[in-house]
Length: 306
Ligand SMILES: [Zn+2]
Image 1 (cartoon, helix red, strand yellow):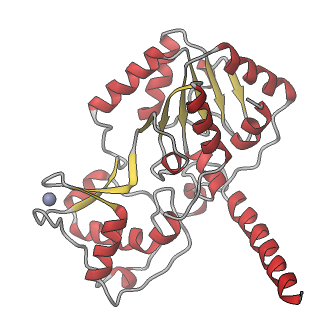
Image 2: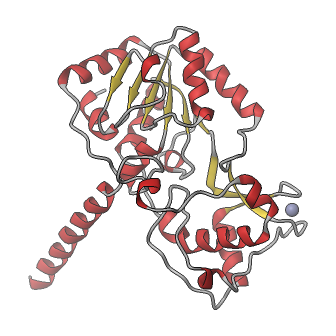
């Protein structure tokens, strides 16, 4: 009996800790009012084919921080900044630092799980409500939730490509390859960025060996659109086409600060399509939206009962 009691107590503690972790990176917000929920439900019932655009705000509820949220985003908490595309391409020492930090953070970053938002969007995909899903996140949580009609606008941290021959491998394969090249290297850090980057000291990075492309010996890069790089033109055109096919656009958990996502909302507005936004805090498209709800995405989606 006492063993059972201990197991139950452990589970309760774990559950409480998981709850604390999952709320750590969510900015404070009041719950949405009933009128907001009513209006959003109406928006979803009157528009059949919805293009949904998600940002970091849907992943913070799984325990992954965002960049820009007041007080809790990466920019507010540290001087740590994401790598710039040109620096990564040009400098081997920057690639060494990037992969060492990414390697150290991978076991935690790859273990994050989809939350109610990802699961709801998958359900809406099955019922046909979601015409297409576009995410700015690189954490693959929509794929883990089963979404198929999906464009990962900024790529995925779960895939790796060669910058010379364009050969691909999974991030998991690279993890094994890195392990083989660095059998004695060990470092752990808990301060994580939205792309899985963690803080390490210069000493920790020294001696870290980056594997090269097994096919041609070229340098490897995650299949992520880094800051300073552009989303490939065919992807942009494809999403513009999906916006055109859609009846309305719903934005979840994004401030739309980055132009790569904002341009689609702008296009929808030009085409006179209704736009709804659920995001804690202001967004770049607030003046284009017919409906704005400033609240936590999962709370809002849960109350829609659709
Ligand atoms: Zn190659």
